[in-house]
Length: 201
Image (cartoon, rainbow, N blue to C red; front, side):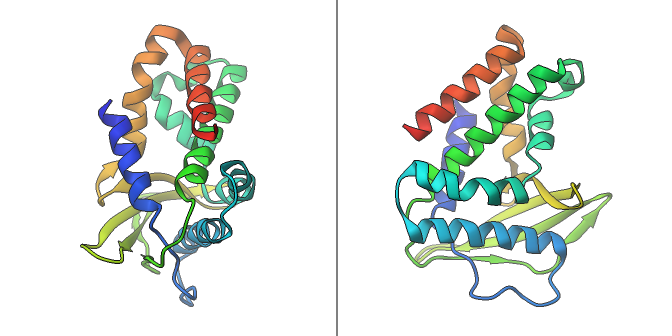
């Protein structure tokens, strides 16, 4: 339950986000990935429409910015390598649907808040970390940090840190663990798809 509350809280904060008017020149490629993702979110928020129409518009941007197969594997945990390829694909497809559905449902309007992306990125081993700050219309700024790694020839998001240090991937692994143990990968895929269906309804 706590994992769901944190995820919902992060999406509620993120729904206020907006991009900078222009992308800083000379920005790190990892920062450019994050900024491009926000650009697409803001465009969808401004366009409005239904959750399904926003889902269709956000799908290409999310597939480009996020390493969804990698995030699925990390969310499942160490047992991922022992899961059959067909079940891995089903889990990845379900995870993608849930991710896009959450953004499409929660990013449904724009009210002028700003999301500032640091053009520099910190390197830690083979990963890069990008800092960003939500500046709401009133109240304190809220940090959202991103971990990216190289995948498919570019830098892709593999984790989001709420308030700068709460890993969304760790929360998902906690949420998925009991279902995976009790119902196996097929049961987990069914649960994730049900969550996506509920969000899109």
